[in-house]
Amino acid sequence: MTLIRPFRALRPAPSKAEDVIAPPYDVLSSDEARKRAKGRPWSFLHISKPEIDLDPSVHVYSEAVYKKAAENLATMIEAGILERDAKPNYYVYRVTMGDHSQTGLVAAASLEAYRAGRIRKHEFTTPAKENDRIRQIEALKAQTGPVMMAYPTSPQVDALLAQSSAGEPALDVTADDGVRHTLWVVDDDRLITEITGRIEDLAALYIADGHHRSAAADKVDENIGANDGGDDTGTFLTVIFPADQMNILDYNRVITDLNGHDPKKLIAEIENSFAIEPVSQPVRPAMPGEFGMYLAGGWYRLRIKPELVPADDPLGRLDISLLSKHLIEPLLGISDPRRDKRIDFVGGSRGLEALQARVNSGEMAIAFAFYPTAMSDVLAVADTGEVMPPKSTWFEPKLADGLVSLVLD
Image (cartoon, rainbow, N blue to C red; front, side, top):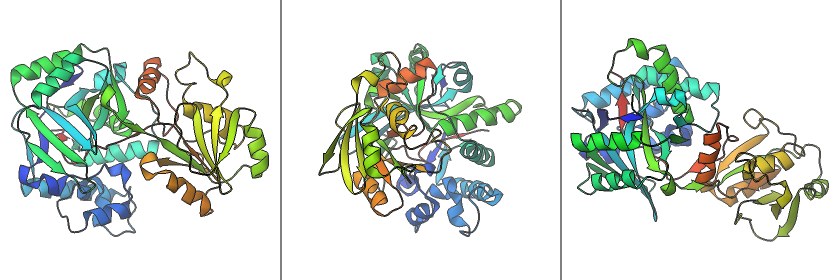
C-alpha cells in the first residue's frame, strides 16, 4: 500500500469540539487529569485517562480502566458528541501556540511501510507503556492518540496543505492551555489522490513523537488486524508536519545523587572533558555543546571540549550522547537511563526553575539543562537506523486527543 491513505475520522460535533479536546494522555498524571476534567463530562480525558472515573485505588493498568474507556467512548458516540465521517477523507490540522504555528496532514499511515523502514523511528519503547496502548486500542477498537510525524522538505506537499486550508475550517477551538487547534476536511477526491501521490514520492516519513502509539498499533495489527477485515486494517493514526515547522524544546535531566563524589571532587573530574564556568544566574544553553549544571546551590556553564565531538557520527555528536558518555555514565554511574531510577527527565516547558527547585528540595542532587535537539539531527539519526537516547526531544505544541480518531471497524 501507499505510505498514507484517507480514512473516516471520528471527531467532535462542531459545537462540542471545545468540550471534547484534551491534552495527550501521557503529559498528565491521573490527579492532573481529574482536575482538568472536573465539570467537563465530555472531555476526552474520560477516554484517554478513564481511571479518573474510578476510585483512585484502582491501578491505571487494571482491566476496569480499559473497560471504562470503552464505555465512555460508546456514551459519547450515542450522545452525538462524537460523529464519524461518511467517507474517507484527509484532514489538515494547524496547531498554534503563541507565535508558533505548524500545519500538518492527518492520515492513516501504513504499518507495512513502518515495518519496512520507510516510516522511520528514533526511540526505543518500554514494554509497560507499549502494552498499555495495546490494551487501550483493543478495548476501544480505535486509535485515539495521533502519532506526530515529519516529512522532509517538499514544496509540493506544502502547497497542497496550503490549498486545503485556505477555506473555512470544520473546527477551530482554543484549548484551556491557550493552544489553538484548527481542522479542515479534505474531501475532494482529486485532491486526495494528489496528496497521496505527493507523499508517496517522498523517500521516508519520520516519527517525531508517539513511538509507543505506533508500536502498539503495529502489535494490535499483527495480533488481530488480519482477521478483522476493517477498512483501516494495517494503518495507524498520524499527523504529518513539515520538518522545518516543528518546534523542539530542551529535555533536561535531574539525578538523585553524586555517585559517591563530593561537589568539589565532581567538578574537578568534569574539567577533564568540559570547560566549566560558575555563573550567578540559571544557565539556558545558547548553542550545541553547551550545558547548564545546577549543583550544591550554584549554576555552572559547561562546554564540551571540541576534540571530543565526532564530526561524522549523527548519534555520537548529539548533546545528550556527549553528556552521557563523558559525564553522566563515567562519573555519575548511570549507564541505562531507560531503567535507572536515579535519573529523571524534565520537559523544557517547565523551565529551569523546575530543575533548581528539585535539587533545592533535596529530592535530587544535580540537574543538567540542554540546548534543544535540532530536527535535522532527529532525521539524521533515523536515517542511519540508530536510536536516540531516551527523552531526547520534547515537542511543543502538543496535539490534542479527541480531535480526530481512527476507528478499527
